[in-house]
Structures are given as structure tokens and as C-alpha cells.
Image (cartoon, rainbow, N blue to C red):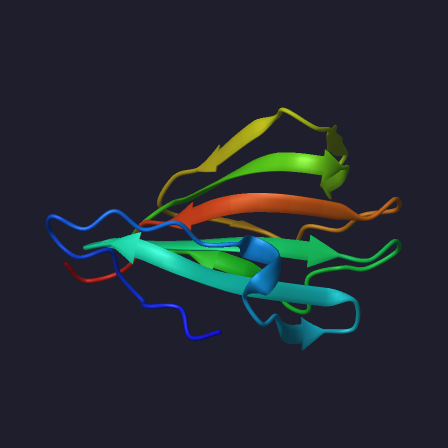
Length: 113
């Protein structure tokens, strides 16, 4: 399945997330890029039980936000379960991990519009 990078003006787009081929970023860490809007990159991440983001994720100029769909995502000493929305402003960094496995839907606000 080829998924467009952006939703075009006047377009309505429906995407089967599980039909988007995942890209492995590290052991047990997979991302599926979804169509975004100008200035916004959208994605779904799946982390296998025990997986950790491969590197420190730095948000120098723009922010990032995600919504935990299932499982638990750990940020430092805080565990975020299903239904939790987590937002990072500019000049933040994090390295998420999970003990149980997790699926999260998110946005990066770091794309030049």
C-alpha cells in the first residue's frame, strides 16, 4: 500500500493503519507514517514489550504529542496508559520505553509548512 504524505485540500482520506508498512527504527520499535497536513507529520508507533526508543528524541524548535491507544508507555518515572495524551513543547527531550508493549498515535510539529 502506498500512503500519501499529506492530505490534499478538498480531499478526504481514510487509511487502514495496519495496512501501512511499518519501518523498524530499532529492536521492537516500529513506526507507520500516516498522511499529515502542512506543518504536521502524523504517525503510529508500536513498541514490543521491553522495547525502548533507540535514541534520545529531541524537540529543539517544535513540539510533539501522542495519544496512547493500547498498552503502556513509560517516560522517565511516569507510566502512561490507554487514553493518555502526552505533549512535549519546544526545548524538550524524552526516550520512551515500555514493559508491556504499546501503540500510540502522534504528531510532530516540526515540518516546514
